[in-house]
Image 1 (tube, rainbow, N blue to C red):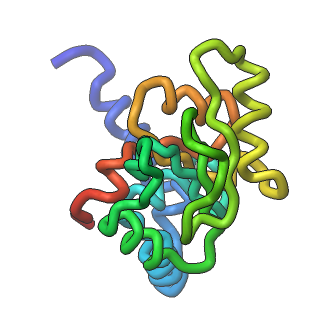
Image 2: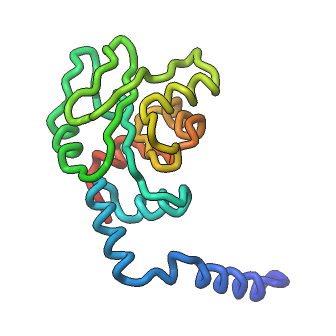
Image 3: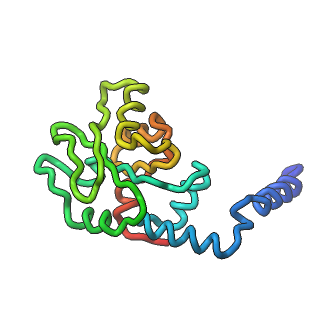
Length: 172
């Protein structure tokens, strides 16, 4: 056994027990589970996003890739059903060219998605245009590509979730 291991284990155990979420009252946990269900998120995902951002998720920002919006621009039925189930949350989109910048139902607003040639500050401004009245830490980005994942950092958003993680089967 390496030197000091017992002390590190003790310190780690104490630190984990002292976390604020380790002491949440049961009614608060139940409210957060209900909120995760309203957003269509697994509770573990919702709790981790909330812990990192320090805020509740007020908007879900979808890329046209995550929504499977391609040239025809029609929202697939499985995507539409998942979005119709979301409650008490702004639904917005970042639309890739050549699609027109229009919010397909049930999204309420849309903006042009950043491209490969846009710099960091331009990307930040384009992402912010999709949620103009909300702070970044209250917005969760759902996308499909590695490029789209960088938009969450550029826009200072609450986080990034892969489309398969959002629209796929819920595990908990």
